[in-house]
Amino acid sequence: MMTELADWDSFYVMAGSAAGALIGLQFVVLTILDQKLPNKGGAQAGAAFLTPTIVHFGVTLLLSALFLAPWQSAGIPATLSSLIGLCGLGYTVITALRMRRQEAYPPGIEDWLFHVVLPLAAYALLASSFFAESSYQREIWFGVGAAALLLLFIGIHNAWDNIAYTVFVHHTKRE
Image (cartoon, rainbow, N blue to C red; front, top):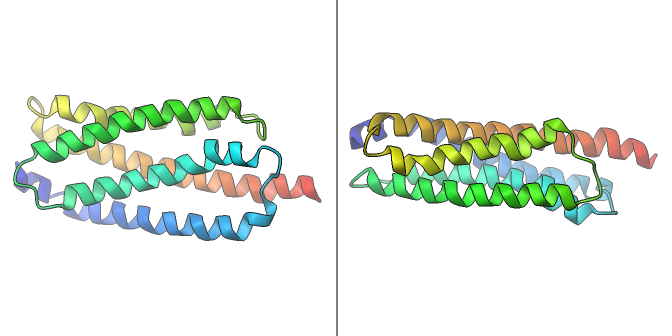
């Protein structure tokens, strides 16, 4: 079983590296765009739309580190990924509540899809990894890998969406 987990090394090195780089890039972009961010409700909108992007990148980085560690058995990383998934499910519910409460931007269908529905699917995959471990030992790695990749792509989409909105929509409104 541990040999099969070792087969995923390249995947997690790539996913973790991408997530780490994108976290850094988000900080740089937010610093540059600081003067263009909306003043009214900006903190609420940031908590609803910007912070989850960093969380998803961070979870991808955490999963990569977790599955690259030299574990003696597969049960520990499976259990930890399930706990991460459960925390992610809770965080996604909090994100949905924040999206509804913020007043800076009316979320559309795409926002609900990429900030709530798809993260719920990714975190549910992670949460179920503990329960699938005993009966589907090989498939667990594909589920966790799919969740990590989904969170990475959600983060990429949301980062682009946040930047594009700030530059093209909000900046145009200020002029």
